[in-house]
Image 1: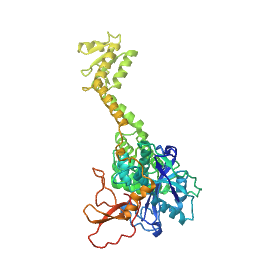
Image 2: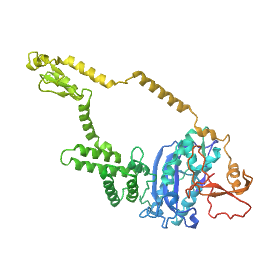
Image 3: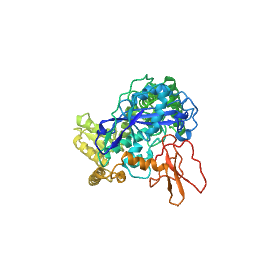
Image 4: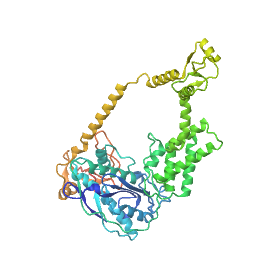
Length: 535
């Protein structure tokens, strides 16, 4: 199904002008010829300059029992009610159409997509493809080439939501865009041009999985929503699924906060409802709007109700829906706790100058007196020297000022209060200068991954010798014992040095690496079903 091209330092097409469809699959096993099926698919369509054009992701009901959930976290219960590949085939073809298909060890995705389409009698024309595993090996000289290692090296971050189709597709898309943009030498596309694929009926059925949930700074629901695909044309969610999701939201927010177990339950219901990023946000906003309507039904939003709304809005990432209520409450608090808090002023007369002074004072926390008492700090009067309240204030030693002087006094008081004990214009300027210096340094610094840039990219023949043929040969280990490289699934644990741990467990399907099998003079049979090597 896929005809391979490559990113090269020679002549070719500027990859930033091309469209790429970055694909990742989660499967029930390694071999479609032996009955393994796709159980999740994630696709990120993007331009070569890194602009994401569309996303697509869904669980896929494989029609068989899933027994390898320890690798990707997908169980038979998760895919219950999810669309089959026949339901999503049209959407998948549309996502791949007119783009260069990208995968890390793309041969794996190639054989599964070919098998799945073949079961439906669909034989799409060959599409152009880029294997980023081959790309990384050809241009970088380092120890590990697994997706998480390469992504960490190039982007500076370990992948999020790994072992999920959309999470890995997003990681690879970001890695590819930075590889193209920041390569020490210009890269071009040498390979077939993208082709348009024939249309196939589209159902729009999706069951996106929100994997890799974590609370983070913004809460569980923010992560859940971010893990869903951001689709240009999101399908309408299933009403019965949305009803269940809202019911679970009500239960989870009853105590004002969502915990990890509740977030996991919401993620399951989000998949069953067919929620995407866009539709999930719409459901959250509609939910909060309904709760607000109940709070306002009696005409008053109490402090307790506002607090509940604020907690829910924070969890739902929908604070903008109650911003007017918060602003009113904040303004009220500001008036009570402003820089003139503790000032009690007595206005005398309704002169415009007196009104201006009182407006300023009240807006900054002052209170208004009606009569002269011991708590009055200032009387503001304009031409009322004979007023008994003025005479009483003078007798009590309370200052009496005309509006213009009172205004200057209060403005200075407000300004002094705003300055605080540690106000320092010089320090602020120095901080901004240092920040600008760091930004300039970041722009000119050389990315760390350039240290592994090969002086000359590997030719296809050199690649075959170095990364294909040598794993079929016996070699001599450092200990003097005979060793053979055997390709088995492993995973990589991040370490301080970026190297792999010796005995790591693995994602089945898309991640494999070579392992050393040591012979002590005894014959060892090779394990059946070894996948293509990653290193």
